[in-house]
Length: 115
Image 1 (cartoon, helix red, strand yellow):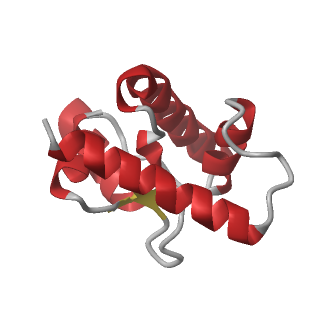
Image 2 (spheres, one colour):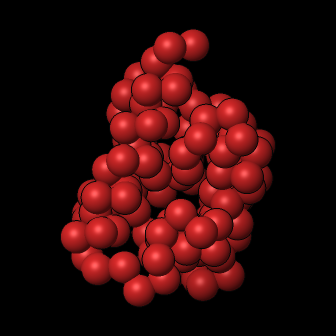
């Protein structure tokens, strides 16, 4: 996902909407409709695939830099995947989740800035 890597190199976050727009521009496919659960799930799968592809090299979840436009935080799927990967306890507190997310962002930015 070039869009995520571009933002990681710039040290910025991206929103789900921006990601959606980038996918449309790069693939020519219809945009995801976030009011539909099936489309939200599909975007989550794409982000999960990006994590799986980049995690061995990056050592962090690149999807950490994708946030809700209004909430400015990652989606619940980010924390679910982190739990599934054994990186975060399933019942982590809000403070633990916030700390984990911030640490993941720092690692992603650090990795891409040195390249």
